Image (tube, rainbow, N blue to C red; front, side):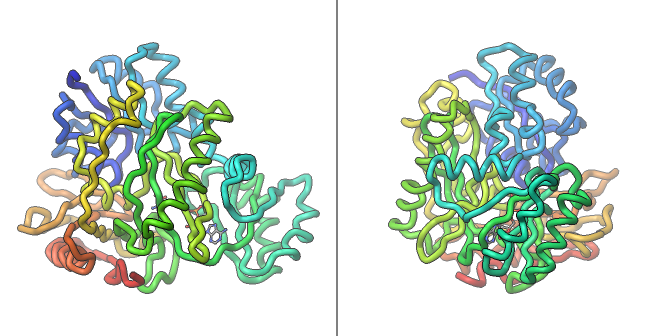
Length: 426
Ligand code: AMP
Ligand code: GLY
């Protein structure tokens, strides 16, 4: 195989972890990241292009003869970046990791995803969709459910579109706010109401060419800001992989009842899909149910799972393109990986940026993946809510966590905040 010029789209910890992994590939001739962050600037060339500027992305690819594009976040995929690049570049050798618009709808529309799951008999919560026209029927459906009530804006709402309410009247008012007052803009013109599933969440990841698939390591994400899983939802405060309670039997159920029917569903629906599919699962009494599909890798799950991948990831992407995914060899370390996210004070609400980060080059036993950082003269400063993800590995989960916390104690910036209980429930 020849070497390639690669472009990673995005600017978070996930993209830093991808850049770290891809830059080690013997097939990587040159790596670009658009727009990237301070962390990715040490691994490749950051290019100041926004993930929504499709024309500039196209020009960058053409000018530099880039042959592989890895799309980190969902937004450009849902808005058709893959389709745009294929139509504009007309090069059969171009590989885009990330689905076209019709596949990305699995994340872009909750209603589409629910219809897909029901059509292909994939276990998920009972639901109905409401809009302006049938909102008067919503009360009857809500009355038929037991609390809490799960209301989901149909479209993308920057991870804020899911509301879980314990009170029936509050649920009814919230539904009106979403549909009639457009609480989440166009995204909540349609709202999926679904049955609440009580269980424990697992993030599963599959790489597929739409025909065959490879299961990547599963992870557990810690979404709430506060210790003991309390407080507001965030993008994710930490992750661990593998997930100790996913034993062989549960793993098989996940593959047989969820993953295989999903990939077969894509085929039946003629959705040609290349890229990662992140299946958010709720395990209820040892049975997997799909909470949501995401058409990308998770963040911070990526920071936890990629260090466990021993194979050359770029080689696997190349094998995917040449229909050899099934026979490619995905080698995964059996060490535990623990990722703890450091965030800015105030996150996920208002927070300040521009705080100088010190201690990044202190001696440690961890991988540091930048989430929201940038270079400013001689310094690296905070530029986002999530700042640095710290990943460590060990035979024992506790030891892996210990290493991450030890490294975090050496990283300094004003307002540094993190959860000191990642993995507490395991
Ligand atoms: P999402 O924004 O789709 O990731 O959803 C946010 C969170 O809401 C999920 O991670 C779950 O914790 C929770 N959630 C979503 N759907 C359900 C459901 N049907 N039952 C229980 N919790 C849910
Ligand atoms: N960590 C959850 C997500 O990436 O959506």
